[in-house]
Image 1: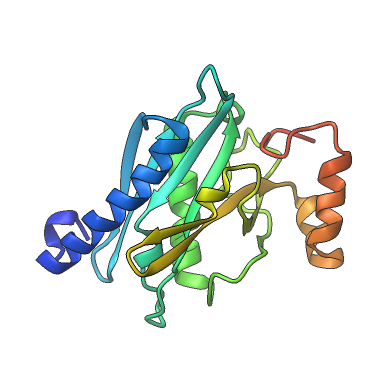
Image 2 (image 1 turned 30 degrees about the horizontal axis):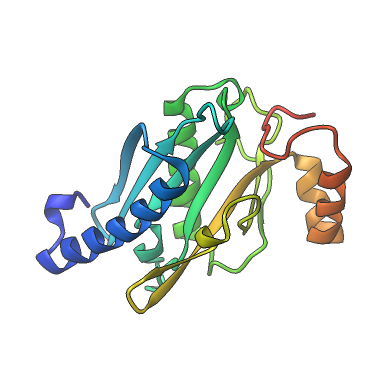
Length: 201
């Protein structure tokens, strides 16, 4: 649903949530460069995706949600988490628009199909991923490599976790599913490639 279609109470709630979340993000990463909005008119789903480009201080680009935590699954249960996708400054050879499309597709799939926000969660290789990426599967896990202030964000009496959305290769997805997240962490630690590089072999 568009922002205009929300009730006054829903708009107020979203505005408060955005103030807390976006303020926390900007405190860590500076100004966002752009925003897109993902809306579903038939249910209470209004998710904003903000793009924080790499800077001279950090070569990491970030795409982060506002409002995903309030999105309702078909069961009526809320997602109750926000997401952050980190990529190298070149975005793995694709445009900001392509990453936004991919993330919006993944968010929609997660809302409609995942029973809960338990982590770690693996999505096997998908044609939704950019063809330029070798990392066509996805891992949703606890936040890593960021400030502790981002792990759990307080919004009034509510605490919202910020989860890490990590493009992973099909082999890495199989490794997690067959041997567990610890084996994946060992693999990452011994790799010559950055975990945020979706073009890694």
